[in-house]
Image (cartoon, rainbow, N blue to C red; front, top):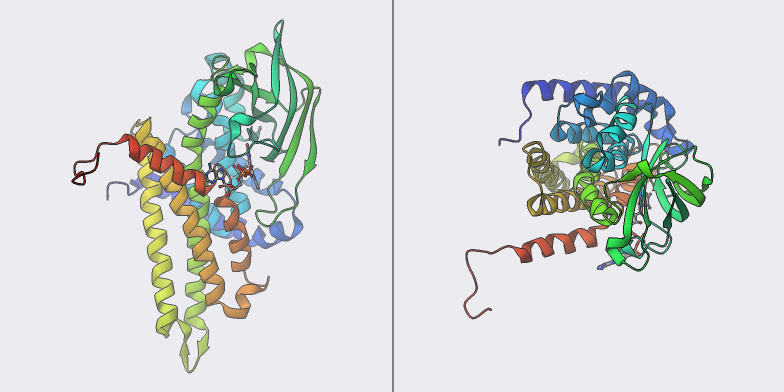
Length: 392
Ligand SMILES: Cc1cc2nc3c(=O)[nH]c(=O)nc-3n(C[C@H](O)[C@H](O)[C@H](O)COP(=O)(O)OP(=O)(O)OC[C@H]3O[C@@H](n4cnc5c(N)ncnc54)[C@H](O)[C@@H]3O)c2cc1C
């Protein structure tokens, strides 16, 4: 298929694969157990220029495109999902600037994001508004050369470790979707605080926190795009970023499949390796096939972006990649635990961690129920060649 990586992309992907095996895999269990943000992994990414894979050359990045960036998240997530989401969220938190930032904003922030000096975050969700994000209550009131931000955000990845937050708030609370605007907020802005970090089931090394804004003065030059364009921007960002979570899910799924395969080759019952019992062989075949199908959807998305495709086609491809990769992650990791039997359930083996890490991929950046709604909505816009007789 045309989505296969070219030689240069394959070379970079293979270098990252090696780095993941040698330097990240040995840390994965410790990161999971300590629940501590892995700054050493961030340092590793900085040293090897991995954040640069997500940025254009004009801003200090490598300009190697989205397909390669997705494969890099996949490779890292095979061994450590917390380390994978650090890369995915660098993209999520930077996309507002990339898509609508003006030249001055891009020059001010993107090089520091491309080098990894700054980590980024994306703050849309609030306690009362997750899937229904337009129901947010945070406000930003114009006051002279500033906006004054008040309110709070919940479940924000990289809370407390990010230097730069893309924050959405209502500049016109009566105007519904078109009353929302987007801002760049730097972590050291007075009145901005991280008030709580959540303990959680999986990706335990990634921070997930609550942000509070009390009369936070943001210079008007930190407004992204036009006032009132924030909701559209939030959705455009998610269209681009969701497949990063798909890549995380696919990585987890392939990592679990690879581990279960090795285990099944070596564990014997009734006089032969369990991989030779047909019920286990069938599971392995289904797991591998699901990963490959997920990869097809994911890489197709990467190719579309790299070819400059936007709009409805991209929205549908993005939701499909996220949905299928992450449902695959949950299903495949559950099967991997089953293949390892009792050993799958204990912490000495990595598949129980992979199963816990997989769950979040079906929830964040739009739940998989919401992805199904998005796909169906895009389908309803399409005209199909064959209509059922008597319909319409
Ligand atoms: C670890 C973690 C990290 C996160 N990181 C970020 C982040 O960095 N930035 C950020 O802004 N947010 C972040 N989130 C928030 C996340 O995106 C939301 O939790 C998610 O979108 C769901 O919102 P909710 O939790 O309010 O659930 P709800 O919206 O209350 O949904 C509850 C259930 O109802 C279903 N549902 C809701 N509406 C519909 C509908 N119309 N049709 C069918 N089913 C529906 C949902 O699919 C879900 O199953 C994070 C969350 C977690 C747990």
